[in-house]
Length: 365
Image (tube, rainbow, N blue to C red; front, side, top):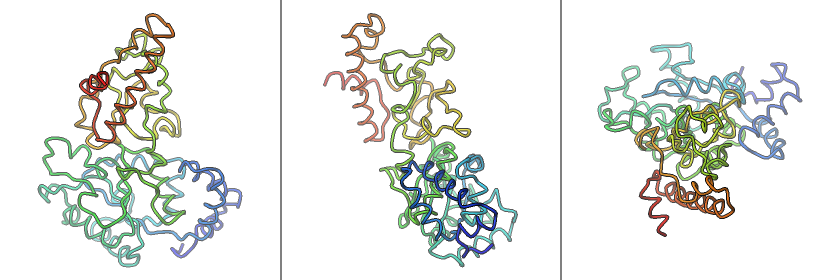
């Protein structure tokens, strides 16, 4: 199989029909939250696409991001590795080891200089290079060396995007993100601990299709997957608006599916596709399974406060709406929701969480 082959050539040799190819294009459009009208454009682009070289490097990480990718169902890991991209280096998935592995990385860089895609998971320790080395090379030196010839970089997981768990106070290794060290290359942050599988494969497929990185938000995340917060698409949102909160994980409210806000859910300040794309082939996501969002796709989520501590106290109007069920109470509850939305937006703009003080200031205004 040659890297000069187009994706269509590879699929045809594999016995994939034209109909199967168009189905692949439709799945790609769906994964990237694109209109069905984009399917013909994706098909036309893929018909001419050549398999790009991908170098995947793992630093201070837990392998959870790779585990997530191998569970992607659209596009599948098999399609990505064997049909769509040429995965030339990956610590976990490659067969080579030792000197042979590093020789493969160096060869891929030399043969595809300026054209390969660099994928990184894990933070980079700068406090002491000896905290993490590969083949005797510090993570920082390997990143900077490999980044020089990359066309673009995808930082997979919160560790590589924002520092993640290793960066949490007191940050003993001096962990930093990819963007803290590489400033002259396009970088796509795909945060999450780990990211949703389809989000990872969707970003790679977008690059394959269009030859460029997708539209990003102010934190470098793909808008298609991180454009809305979890709270706004959560099926428990109506209970939040009515002030119906579970007080414990096993009370009647929890059993009825009430909002988990009081139990520490960070959905109001977390931007991700969990509530729409979900996990395990679209089966569920943490809130649907009864556990509040941890905010894992946000910077410094380990230091945002206790996972089971509420972002704020309930707002005026909630209790009235519950106790009396009157129109006035419902309006008060709605007003509270609007106020909460304003506070959340301010928190997002300032990259902060919502505190009781924030709410009191909002009420006074």
